[in-house]
Image 1 (cartoon, one colour):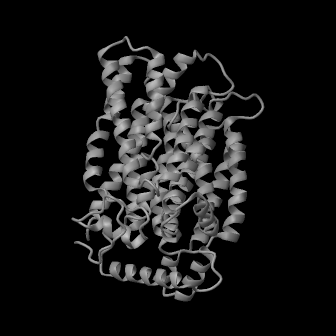
Image 2: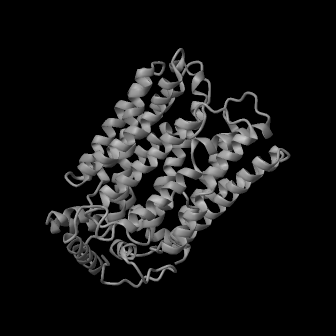
Image 3: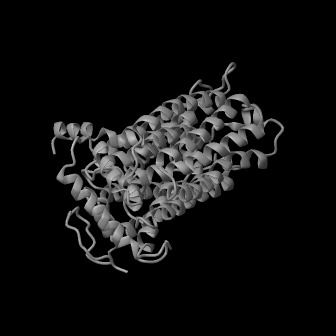
Length: 479
């Protein structure tokens, strides 16, 4: 497919990306609060931390991830019972209140903790809703790029949050600035949810609303009549739902354990490569090279996140062309090798110069941006049985948030200034990536340009897994 044809197809299917825009904007807003546990923004210089114990500050920061896990399970309960538009209004309400509290009480520890807990709740809920909704409404040619764009928007939010939190302002507190920006996102999200949020046809057919499902697909595909492609899509959805009807809701039975483990491993790799400890080491090395003493903007964070955004955008547009599997494997192996090599080097010698370390870490950031954090989201949208999907995604999201809490809590009091600390931390982060990459190489199927039913079948097969992107499906699910 040429560039012109791709652009025309993307424009024709624009209603599909519009339908999940509310959730994506919510993640953009919550990503700004997520930044606090990914980068050291010197929170102890902010007024809400004054005369507070380290434990109180730590709990206030990690409460975002705790409530994000709660939000994932809350969303699992809601998504099987209510329409997406209704759930989106709940997300908007949570984010609006959280941002408002952040604006009104920027210097109060209880206020910041309450705001971060609400934003975490909105983050966990919106993440699950967007992954499920997007996976069920997107055409197979665009599912990869649009689902990868979700992670890209979170990264954009992290960049804004990390930079603004490190900027000292006399008239406007960073928390107020983030709250105002988040409210702007929520105003846009409210109107988008009101106007262009169309329900998933899978959700409608599950409730025997076939006529509504057909009309929803027509709006999503920008068609004025019921075409044969739409009729075939409805037939395939019905077939998929009938196949899943005989299975249990347990996420550990009926072959669901394999995709659950694979995506959980992908999430573990994502956290190991992009967490507070690893990011702080990279920032410290870059600051040493740039000799940053004072700046209105944290240049080291800006450099790292700008690379992640630029390369991530390229990977986002490549995930349907090169495939999920190839991008994730290259990203995982390159990141793992660099982290292990740098860890061994820092432990073995003190002679490595900061400029060499900075160059290698920037290369690591390029590799990590190719798919380590975005591909697991794409796979979440297409890997699971419809009866088990919500709980399965909630489980891997909780695992991700638990890992962030553990890492942040362990290294929060470390200064991460010595090479011995750098070496040990990088070695612990990098070593698990290599065996995870091997497991992915052996077991992860390629699902690009497959329908949601075909992709799910590939994940549930025990043998004959597609690795090279063949679009031929099989009709039998393995127990």
